[in-house]
Amino acid sequence: MDKFVSLTGVAAPLPMINVDTDMIIPKQYLKTIKRTGLGSHLFDEMRFNDDGSEKPDFVLNREPYRDATVLISDENFGCGSSREHAPWALLDFGIRCVIAPSFADIFFNNCVNNGILAIKLPHAEVHALLKDADGGHNARFTVDLESQTITRPDGSTLTFEIEPERKHRLLNGLDPIGLSLQKDDAISGFEARVNEERPWL
Image (cartoon, rainbow, N blue to C red; front, side, top):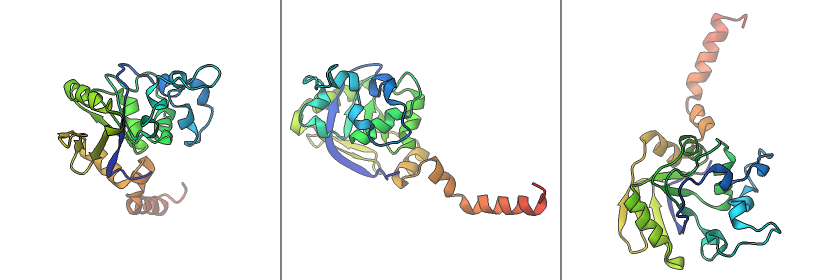
């Protein structure tokens, strides 16, 4: 997966609590195991009418948020079913960072497994960022993982916490397979010992 080091881009405000995974990517789009193409269906029922036309009031259908790389939302983001298609859809749309006061655990873990930085911040700070994000073309943020800072449109910064293991994985672009391959020598050594000690296996 792609490394996450630093990101500068437009942040889209989605001030909703309990945004569940079916809202992020509805169930009818779960038939594929491809990670591409799902971005066009991100928030499908909120973005589109039954005839496929856009709902002009939805944030991702408005400029400049069509090109958002950061999404700011509210409490319990990513709740509901454990579908990994949810972070796939966000990533395919172009969202690399989601900021909220809290996340559903499985969604939170799926984010790091797919190269999305999910940031937890106190309610007051999230609500301040939501107000910043309402600034349209001025709603540009820089998220720096190395320094664990968010630079707001006015130049002020906020800091965020992240577990060292998650930070290491994102900075180095390591999904679970990549993390395992870092121990390739130890795995190969173990297999060689097993073959020597128990050749009948």
